[in-house]
Image (cartoon, rainbow, N blue to C red):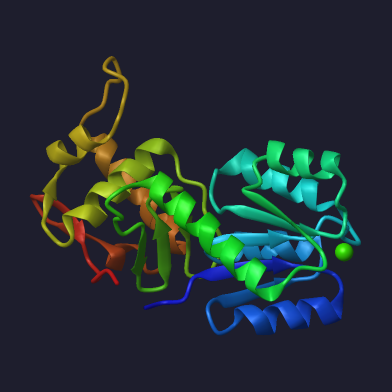
Length: 235
Ligand code: CA
């Protein structure tokens, strides 16, 4: 089974090394030693859970958490900090943190808190658990958070209609979808004057966003006279 990605944000080099060593047998660890690095990781890699220190050299961990939550309820966040005042804990949890652990922590305690948060947030997301991440060549799509990483590992913002079309094609898994079927899949307002040309325009935009126009046609292939299908095998 693929290891989940843990983003570990910690500016103390020895604690960063120690915690990474503790997590590595169970998780794939993405390290950051300040908020700027953490943002770069979040923009380029799928993160399953984030462990955030509060006192960081460039910005406060709470600021990072707030901006993460402004975008999505995912990934879950555990604050790991030596600040143990009640107000820090309350602030952290108010912002949308899932748990708060005070330094120094017991290694087993950290692992059990991570597992508890992952269980809770997964159970919350959907039961039964379904596949939420799809990889197509170099492109990765998170169906839950509606995020797409292109082949240069940048997140690309999709409009709702673009993402709906992409998701319909991905879910059809190689079956050809007509423009009419895709039009039904797009949640356009009823008075929207959308025709089949709308789908062609959306597909063109999706292809461009997926790969700067280079491999887009490979991911969504045109079936002349019929419609579109997924051109790459999902993994
Ligand atoms: Ca610190």
